[in-house]
Length: 168
Image (tube, rainbow, N blue to C red; front, side, top):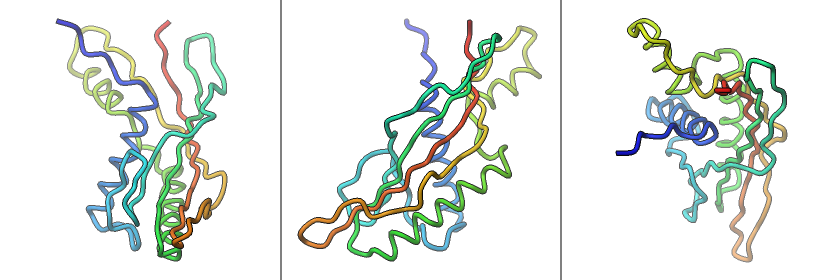
C-alpha cells in the first residue's frame, strides 16, 4: 500500500485560503459576500472562483532549505450586476489584507499537525510544508471582459507569500 503523499504547497495554501474565507462567509462575517467561493473557474453567474495564476516563483532561499515563495491567485466573478461584483471583490481584498495583521488565521493544516506532534511525539516530527507570511493585492478588482449580452467578468489578482520548509 502506498503512503499518502503530502499535498503540494500551492494546493494546500489555496485550500487553506478558500476554507478560511468560506468559514467566515458561513459566520456572516461579510456584508456583500454571502455565497461560498469555489476553487475553480465558474460558469454560473455571481459566484466567485478562486484559481491559481501564472507567475508564482521562488523569491529567496537560505542554506537551511527554507524557501520564500510568492504564489499568485485570482478571484473571478461573471455577472450582470457590476456593482455587486466590485463590492464583493473589494470586500475580499480588505479581508485578505487584514490577514497581514493576524497571521495566525492562515496556517497550513500540516503546520497544525506539526505543532500538535511536537507535544505528543518522542520522535522528531516532519516539518510543515509552509508558513504564511503576508498577502499583497497588486491591483484593485477590475472588469476584464464583457460579452455581447452585457455579462462582465471581474478579476482580482492576489499574491500570497509563504515560507516553505524544504527537506534537503
